Length: 353
Image (cartoon, rainbow, N blue to C red):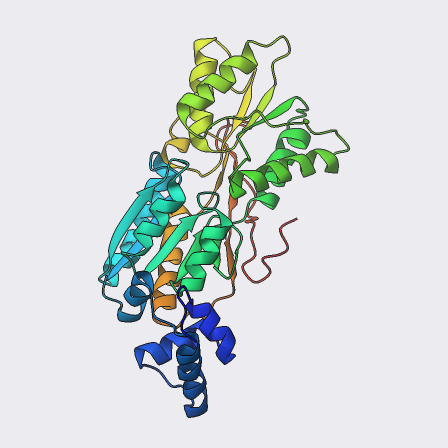
């Protein structure tokens, strides 16, 4: 029966095989048992499957390009991730198409459009609606999520957040006696920041303290950190410590504190996340959590390439280690450092609590 809109997933379900097997049969490559091949061909005929433009691009692999979708493109974090992603793509003789959605309302349409021009697509968590991810996966396009849990059949590559956030917050509470600590960052739409906020709250409960009811919602750039910190320091009861969701926010906090004559860390402890190069150069050097930004991008590209070549045998979710880096912005003496205790467990990704 002929009908429009049949997807490669429907063909796979009808034939009782994987999407990869349908792709092998359509491309005429790889080893497929004769009876399996016939089931796939029969399903294609019965469903009237005709690859869409996106599907044809996948089958023919004519683009020689990988795509990556970010919520924004500014700042050292994205620069490092893009650098790692591009290095793997260039080594594989693939070009890179980059889309910064800036969380615009029509971003899903932009994502679907760029998907027609690449052989595989990586997307940051929170930038695309789940329905769009399911649509891309159903089309057969190799799809990998970055900094997000897996979803709708799309594997993911991300860094560990919860345990590192607990350890950093515990250091502020037990190591320095801080209880008036604020979390500066917006968990809405960001899986990474959501997990950092979760670890922050868990550390309070571990110390038999009540965590703040809400985070101080802020963007992840210096200007947003400056504004958030200015409002906090101008309040009647300012905090004694700040857990900033990334280093850029922390740098904004430094500027705001300096403008008000607030001494770091004597009057205000500040911590960050990422360990960008500037973190060790500001004064005082920033206590932060180091995550492998470049490796995040590189591993994501390798997973896309493996998916294109039907060779991805990694688990659905890979979680990279993070590491607490103790410097002096939290109140520790110059030259202090965290004990070797990286967080994250690629072999046991569910154990993040």
